[in-house]
Image 1: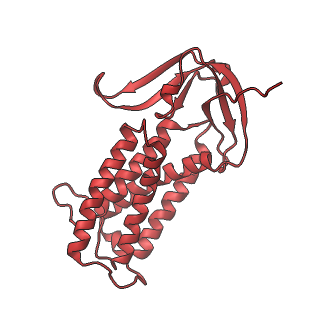
Image 2: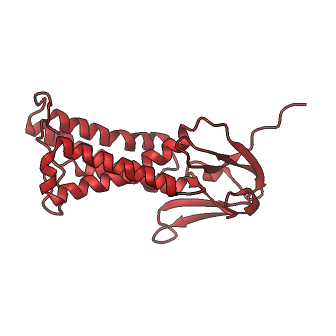
Image 3: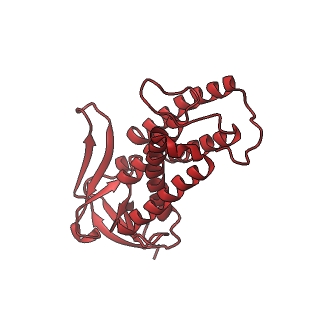
Length: 245
């Protein structure tokens, strides 16, 4: 993004080194977040949120020296494609797999608005993207994954409502394994009494860092809340201790 940008702070050689290191970090964080986030869950999500912002700031400070080239075998060493897309997919993927909503219509409409706004912002500062379908596709993919992840997590994490809990019992647990029994798990589900789940379905998506803390037969609570952005969400929680008599 080069409009009204300050003078470039880094040489091309230094930018190449920064991007090379950043690409390794982006791949590591993105893959960990998507496939192995049984530990450092919130740290990995925070990094997936921040790495693309840092890449955009670097592009702004470089006065348009960088690009978003993503063609296989032709990627520029000054491309920010990996720094944008891989963490965004990690963030969006965790939102898809870990969060439960009663309806997705409003959430998807808000995501679409965020996508359009992000793409318009890039085009405002990088008019040349209009003539480069490859780079524009990179921006669109980033905007889609990043916008959904940020919108969904914002609706849940920033929800000011205290919500309400419904007690139930864990009936079953399921871990989806990709590839084979030794593959990586992308999502985990727990089944409870259908009456306790909005919509009547027994299965609830559960964060990977919390899955092991639940066991069949446990007394648990299904927490439901209206959401910051108006989309009602729910999750499985350990019930709070009963107040002392």
